[in-house]
Image 1 (cartoon, one colour):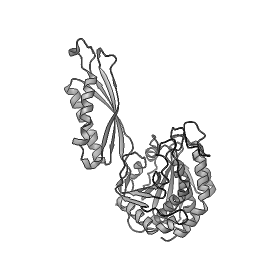
Image 2 (cartoon, one colour):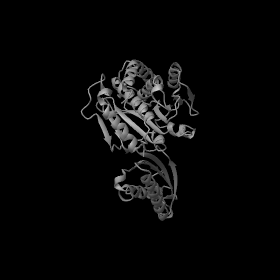
Image 3 (cartoon, one colour):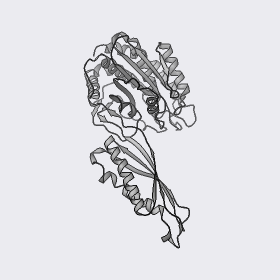
Image 4 (cartoon, one colour):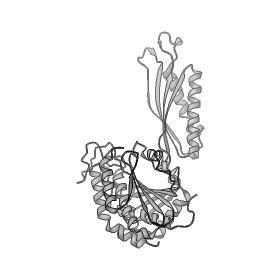
Length: 404
């Protein structure tokens, strides 16, 4: 690829600083919508680079834009900044100083990587056209920060494409670029069944809400097998149920909570319809009523097939240069194709609106994400930045349509 040699040189020059930033953020983690210190660090770095930015209406978010001065496309690059409510147990010299808060999902790496990419791409403005927008997003974990930023105008000007990167718990240096759905829509229901209380000596005058709930739950567990195409990769789980006051009283109320995961909009819609239809039908047939409280979760990350294939080909064509000086190229260094996982990731809110490519970069098999022992091999942040910058410059300079 043209300009790759310059990208690698600039990335390598800033590699030590990227690790310093990552360690600083790791040592001072902040929970969703409370990333005040992290945001201040991001803005100081952008100021030092001379990159203009806006403070998002969504608390702690920052949106920076580099304009090449030449007409062209708008590319959005995103990193998340928040940590998790976990007590770190890694023993690292730069372990979290905040009790019960830890970067256990790599967002410290994502933020440091995006700052490093901004520095490189700013220094190379003469080598690419159009504009690149850098989104430092709050509250990916349980906060839906991406959804909130979009609600508050982030996509008022629609980007031509979005790209994001996430660390992955696999052998170092393995890159994964899934096609189409790579995560799931995750949604929750709270369902309340109302019956009629009575004493157990005369149950016929009551309507047993717990009995109704049991019948409904049994029926709901049949949805995935009977109402959803088995190729759609859907799950339904009832994770909590409560009801009743005493063993000698027919309960007039029962509540349970349902979590659903669906790879596609079509399966999601079918799931919603089936849950409500079965619940209402069974409840009414047994003399009760049902109350629904729906909690919309995260949208599925959908990797544009053509764009993601183009990025994967770009990596294959330049693998030797990308890995040079960092480490040996793993035997199966690029995972490309159908890589659906049913976890949730709020980059899905971006990917449902604009052509997107979400890339996972393996940084070691230490412990799973959201674990108090989670660690990364910082050595591979360089590869993340090289790949992101290479893809950004190539995309901005590509004249063909490269999305579905």
